[in-house]
Image (cartoon, rainbow, N blue to C red; front, top):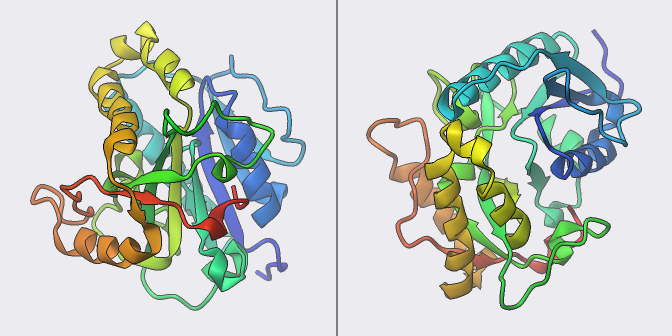
Length: 282
């Protein structure tokens, strides 16, 4: 099988009840990979198609009402099976949640296709996780017509989002794409995974007030996520470039005993200033 220059890398995600992040996901990966190489699973026949998805491969599946933990496992299993089949056509598959974006460091002056199709070893690549949030004293509400990172300047360096989202061969992701089953991980020094789930304080409060999510077991997760705003507001932000290498090393060395193939959390909850070169990327 011979791939064209733009048909080497596919991106996969799954959405339900989202009219906010999916447009950014399509816009970003459409520019990076081409819309025809995007695969979007709609969780439920009641889901409306995004406006900007003319060439996106849309897969509709019946919705199964599941508690959060079981739903996470089910989503990872579905995406793993789809990714496995895509390796009949693609060299690399990117997969993660709809509110996340994978970025190759702009200082390399390259794109995801050229970077990810280099002759790597192993089965996956992890990106350093940056949990982006609003500094409620310094930043206003998000304007979706402008790049996110021109409006948000701070992030929590979080192992929760240091995920093996790049598959170099067929594999099985665990819940939330936090690990690859039966495999180790390696954090790439040039890849970053930006999590935008708590990008806007008001929107996040409204989501946390959604009773249906609490009934499905999201209470603890949402409460923990809301802490991001206080971490950013009260933390002393350090320069990202001076901390990224330390974060990769420490997340790789200090792993949870219950899952040694997942990166370890950084106890001081470090807040960094996102380097200026990322401003217009997403």
